Image 1 (cartoon, rainbow, N blue to C red):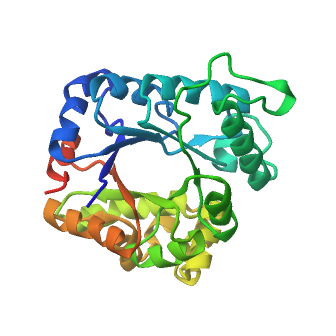
Image 2: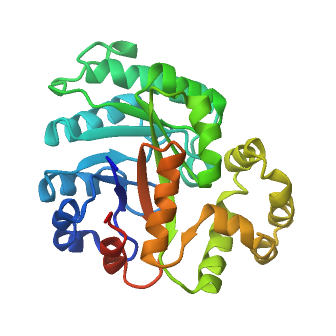
Length: 307
């Protein structure tokens, strides 16, 4: 297997404490560290630290939202990381969601496809040293412009990722869903998948965690549409109905066990690694483990490293 990534920071571990964790990742077999940005750390600071702590890792954002940073600021930040980790940084961008963009940041979530497309074009031009929209030009473009990959779930954004970007990032899908995504993306682009992993042999506990996460994520319209496209819509319909009615507990309880088992990797570390490899066998180029809290996250990261 060529690549094996992990999401940083690890859940529940203070960012400064990663100084003792990150340098060991490459020796364990990890090739990549990818950040996330929702309501915790930002997408770039953990990678700036990892660039110094682990000079052998490829680093990427999964993802930086295009609505919450202007394209010029996004280009400046990406250029800084590319300069700090030349040849090792990948900029992942995406539309995010109405909750994050509108409710939390007070920015209208309008025409997300166009916003991603236009930001991609602006940032790529700027990182290459060109003059982007409005006359913006980086004072010092990176010597090695970073690849840009798009958060993409359905055919439209996957086609954009294939034709104008350097690959696609997807998440909340089963290994059996990968062929549909790979077909829509095409064979020539890198497919990166954030895979949620809960390394515990207590299936009941893992499913309880999974039901809560799935009810929260898959009721967001973009994820609901994604799973409609994948053919899981009818099984998730009771979840959505309960959520819309304001019954959060009922929505979680309505998530079927088989859906949890498809979308959340759980079990012993050996079983989890085998399950992650099933994503690769189905067409994922870069699996990125996103740990779901269950015990010691540092020990889990070590146990889930490729063998």
